[in-house]
Length: 186
Image (tube, rainbow, N blue to C red; front, top):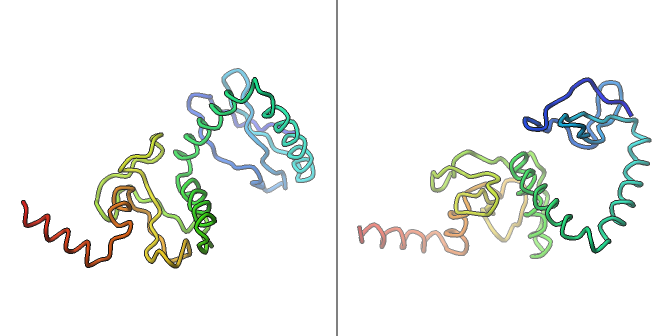
């Protein structure tokens, strides 16, 4: 294992690499290591990474099965998911969309680059609150333009959860009628 000279403070830590990233010298990124308030990058050869992943997965599964660790594991997973929503919102949205596609039997062929999260909702113009913890009306949400086509390239937009709920099962004619009714009331 080779630890680079790049060191960050734990308080201002910025995740720059993902497991599997490859450097110019052929080393593969394994993980970050926390030592006394500092964060170090861990790099290894591709062969070492395969062995370490297998050992890590085996010992992690054994640790997670112990009853005394279940509550701690739940907290760790929750904290990790919250950080991932903030760091990589597109990946988090993509993962949730893939799960929904499987449950509903819809086609899915999206990649992380296909999910672009804007700062403002294109439909309502409200700011999108990325990774704020609980889902809110301002949370980003993947909208299927034509729901029957599924989660495929060119058929999705990222809009606010509120706009997606409004648009959920209404036809354009119904939306127009509601808009017309509401505008006449005010």
